[in-house]
Image 1 (cartoon, rainbow, N blue to C red):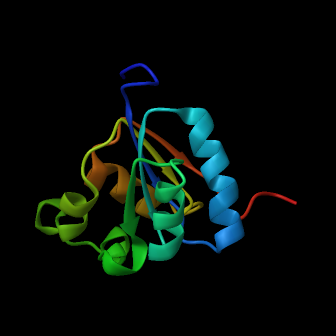
Image 2 (image 1 turned 60 degrees about the vertical axis):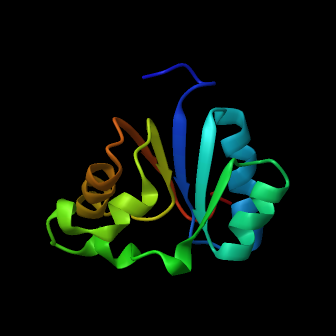
Length: 120
């Protein structure tokens, strides 16, 4: 793994605006080049504020492929998300099959799967 400044982080959060903003604070602490997959306006907001380097619109991606059995090489999602050193996802928390699939699609050697909402 590269050091924190050079690593690429792919972050996925399908939640509401407030939850994504809190997630952004966590991503800032991680450092590196962060690509955020979230609802389009939420992802663009965090990119515009300089919290993340790139914004990808959750709704425009074939996220259903995370839960499919199609061969990874035939999926569009992996190409759209790109490779990363660290995957941080609030999608698929608690679903071991979907977690393996996300790691396979992104080539992530390290991954963190978190709940959509922070614990109360």
